Amino acid sequence: MNKLEVQKRVLQNGKPLDLEKFEWDEEAKVFSSAKNYLVIDFGNINDCTFATGHSCTFETGSDCVVVRRDIYQVIELKEGKRIKLNGYRINGFNVLKTKEEIITVNGVKYKKIEDE
Image (cartoon, rainbow, N blue to C red; front, side):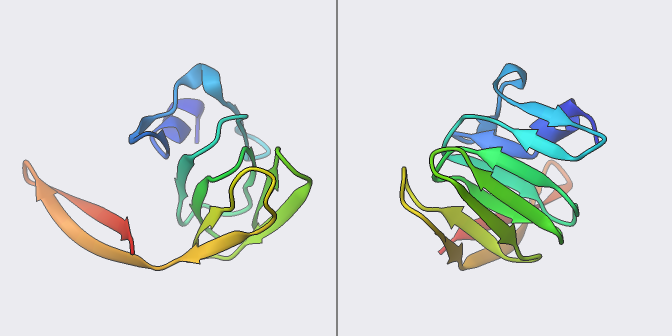
C-alpha cells in the first residue's frame, strides 16, 4: 500500500489527512503523524505500527500496535475492535461500540460505521 492509498484510510475532520502531515514506511508498514483526533481505518490490514497523538480512533487487522506521542504508551490493537485513545496525557483507550450499515451512493455500495 502506498502513501496515497494510506491517505484514503486516515481522516481528520472527515477529510483525508494531507500527505505532508504524515509519514508512511511502505516496507515496514509504519504510519507516523503528530496529529490528534485522527480516524484510522486499517481494517483487515495486519502487522502495522502507528505513532500518533491523542484522541485517535483505530480499526485494524491483527498484530498492530499504537505508540502514543503525548505519553509513553504502547497499545496492542485487537483485530475487529474499534478503539479511541484517551485525551491528552491520559493513559488508555476505550473500545467503541459501533453500528454498521451498507449505503448506496450513485450505485456504489459503502460501509457506513457510526460509533454509538
